[in-house]
Length: 365
Image 1 (cartoon, rainbow, N blue to C red):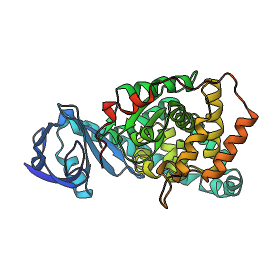
Image 2 (spheres, helix red, strand yellow):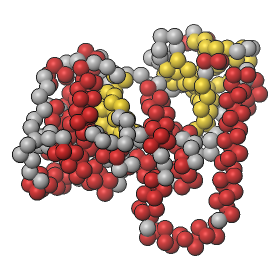
Image 3 (tube, rainbow, N blue to C red):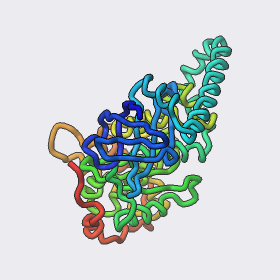
Image 4 (cartoon, rainbow, N blue to C red):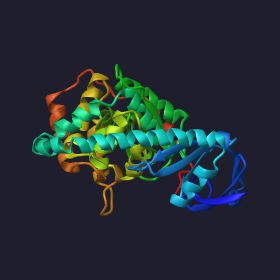
């Protein structure tokens, strides 16, 4: 019986996000302080961080809760690598092969350093085009793997709504907005008091319950979904990843290894800043998607106008990473004048009933 230290995530434990002592005994891991015991053959290992030096152990409890352990430091990583049972050693061997691939990539990058220096001037002028070129090398399957990996970390925090009237409404509206898309969209609600929504690579859209509470009707929700869908369709999250992680980590994703980007994207979700051009594009193309679906597009303006009147010095979270709200409203109003949609109709849903969906109640503080 030997101990190592890790950070516990998941469940509704008061120790979530705090260091814990983990006991490795034979084929079993135990966290005595939480009465958690799990067989190692139920554990899935993943590796994160820019240099693939962060280790995570994931499993599901019999009751369905998702748990994760992040090993604290080098000594803890070395300990579990030396003492892991067969089921985990096999996963560590796969990581070792991945490390060899990473070193090969870095060696290759070093060998073309001279070419890189000579190309730097061109890249400076054509940076956006170069980022677009790189993200287009990422397949839909790789995007979906990346998004699913980040979603697993978010689900570890709990408070996710996956079924009920509100979710059914999201799916219904989302289906209208994503006809003929190459992505297979998934829709979730996170019970959270911040007015926010965000998109993950590969077609995962998450809406905070507070945004549903704030919206006056389904048209305003549809406007948010249309905007976030365009972040997926235009690969804005991937482009943001290239800017945040650097080209080498992005190249790992192109080569089929999503772990390098997962932890950083998950960490950035609460503070996701897209470029001004990306936000303008999501507004413009989101508006066109509403018109194609024949959904009354006015909700994009009315929601923004309502959120702009929120009391307090700080803007709502959903707006904090977007262009100036007054300018956005004016731009969208001009677009509506240029592209009137006589065939568009308000969505017909019992909005009050949706807002009172029991699955959305008991929002955490």
